[in-house]
Length: 244
Ligand SMILES: C[S@@+](CC[C@H](N)C(=O)[O-])C[C@H]1O[C@@H](n2cnc3c(N)ncnc32)[C@H](O)[C@@H]1O
Image (cartoon, rainbow, N blue to C red; front, side):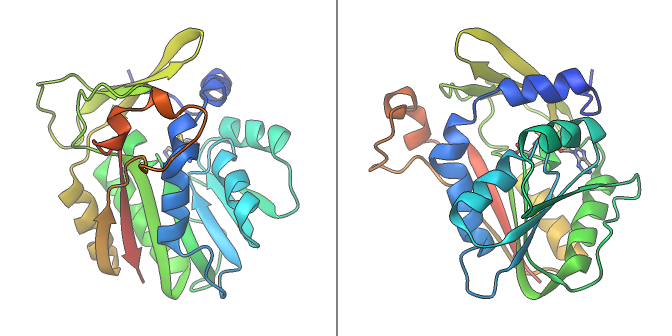
């Protein structure tokens, strides 16, 4: 059964998940790829912003404002109650995936673990096209997702699918997110091969489309470094990078 992001209990349980790896290296790589530190970057779109955690993380290191948009009123309810900040404006997205934003105005856009939640290729294509519409020419859209080539890899704090099983494009796949001292959160994700995602970005009009696969840096000295040995050698994430 799909994970229903509209349910408040799903939003609250997602908020319980501690994003250790994301904080350790994924989000920094995402922000760098999106060019958030570049001088002209003032307004950032976070499409599929969820509970606002990524928006808050962006503000920690960048002098920008963030438009945090999501389809789920429940996710945005948690976001508004936990992460109210004058530099973040929250926006509910309707069924047509359209944003209340003019063409060509946004300096950079990111999405973090959004495509992997969507079973329908057409919806993903509509999102990519909508982000393309609102970005200014020359701006970058960077998309962080679970690495589709990491099926069954025993990462310390998460496992995507079952080892040895092949998954078709768009097929449901279980993502188990570990929580210290609690049962793992089990999410139903959807498996989208890299080529399919790159093709969608190109079809929307993006040029210079590519990807990077960050691993935990060798010099990472965080308190949780010993918990993530596999993350040093096997990339748990992929970041698609597309310039308008
Ligand atoms: C796994 S959560 C990620 C939230 C946040 N980006 C983060 O990294 O913490 C996936 C989010 O994608 C949103 N989402 C799913 N389908 C969507 C769609 N069609 N349009 C916009 N957001 C969508 C969900 O409501 C949910 O907030």
